[in-house]
Image (cartoon, rainbow, N blue to C red; front, side):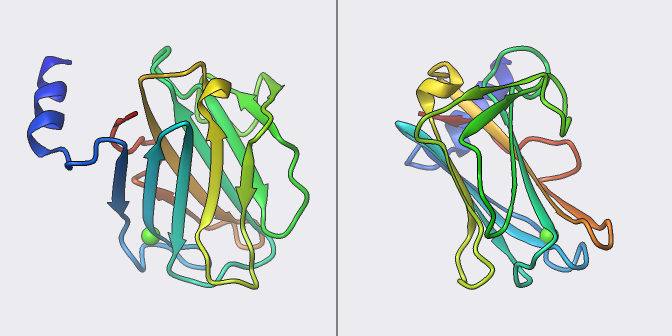
Length: 163
Ligand SMILES: [Ca+2]
């Protein structure tokens, strides 16, 4: 814990509320994350760049750790250009099946196969219990072929992002 805090202080960027992690290009087929950027302000905003065009049948899943318990606390998943229910899933593991969903006014999810824009979510902090720090794991899955790409790695979170 202490070591992690020291490392974060020494190597952290000047802007503590933003972290970006590059993901290898070519490490998966049909879906391929190239970069994840997390901004932690009044909302937690996650933008994910894809190295390949977005397509129908891709599912975009996000797990958020708000620092409570050993695993992820929240889950959001959706498809491109489809209706999105503004509910946040409660989870305790890297599961696609939340124990329940809670309303989160202001929750946004975006994935547009017709625009060259990142896949993104925006989650108001109040929906997450106003955490001091958060970290995020992302998985893109092509449901036709079953291929997946995780960032930063399978069932692995990126760096903590302070508000
Ligand atoms: Ca990748």
